[in-house]
Length: 177
View 1 (cartoon, helix red, strand yellow):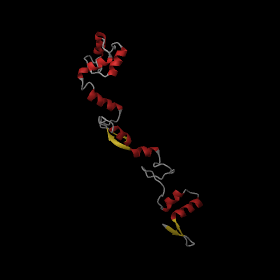
View 2: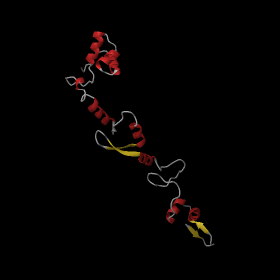
View 3: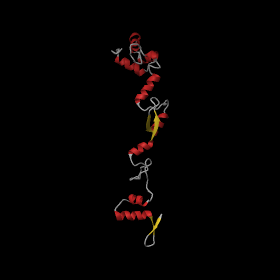
View 4: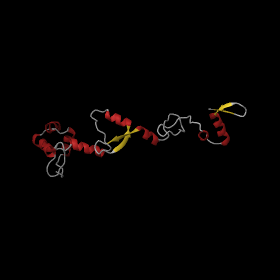
């Protein structure tokens, strides 16, 4: 768009806006807006507001950046809708064995307990309300009676070696048993 001045010279509207800005001591953006000149600088990718600092930035605020990079997901356990960064979801789903997305650690724990805990392995749960996954008495008995080490006990009972080591380190049956 061009404008013809009193002297007959053509000038762009942007140049006129800069001139008015200097005369009225107002920001150029404000005068451009009043004259209907479209903004020519960078704008925020999320909310389309003009950016004040255009060097190496694409968003007007941290809030806009977070909102732009997050995607809507649904928890596989409770069905609640939540947001998470897209890069984090892609990274986690590319891992081996990572098949589910949960909104919290509580939902992840509930899912794991239902699919891998006592619900699936009731033989590990004992009567009397004790909900230890592994039988401490069997581990300690094998150690005392046969003199077996942690690796042999682990293989015989199918218990992870770290768990057997922890039971043997404590060395006694807990009061809760």
